[in-house]
Image (cartoon, rainbow, N blue to C red; front, side, top):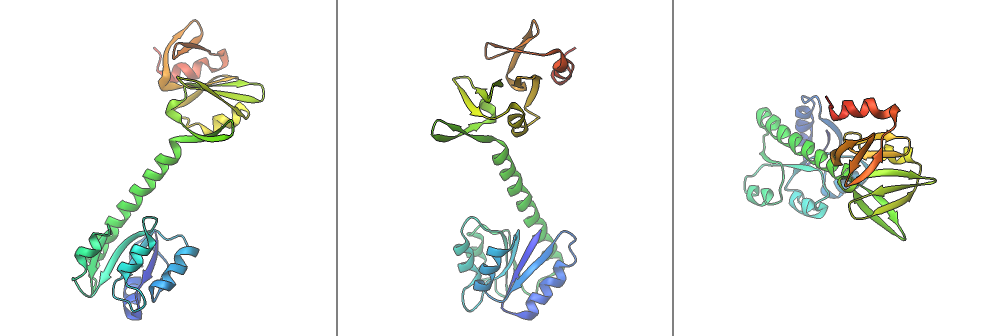
Length: 231
């Protein structure tokens, strides 16, 4: 985790750096003495976690958090006072530590931040892997992987068949195959890729998907049978 420490007190920053050095996966990539300096750093560096003081002269930590909006690092507030705790948690931060920061509480807060960061990354991964964008006429359209029944090579194009229609994309089948998640799709012919969970049956050397036959070449049959766990 890349961490940015923001505190207008140099001694406080040094203390936090010493605590952070005890956490193997926590890397302090920068420190700032104020919110404006922190904003500049956030534009230039990849930061996963902010250790953020609240009472600072030019802009408080609360104001900086509101300014950053939703697209911000995970935040742990650190303050000499407990007065801001309710307001801080209304901003959906990971934790609120009071100075002097105790090592045990620091580790607990870092663990909580780590869980949030891991969860956020997992959600982003799911979002990225759930669909692709294709050009349909003059419109770039989002097509979910779970909508695709099978892909069929047709010359310089690939037809992506769905339950309602097909979309023709100008691409070799190999390039399309590289974009499709292998856990959902399998190559069954030099011209066809099938969605495994859309296969209804296997009949006379062909897959039946959505009532349509999709040919299976001998070269791919063994891998298909293994994937389908055919007895």
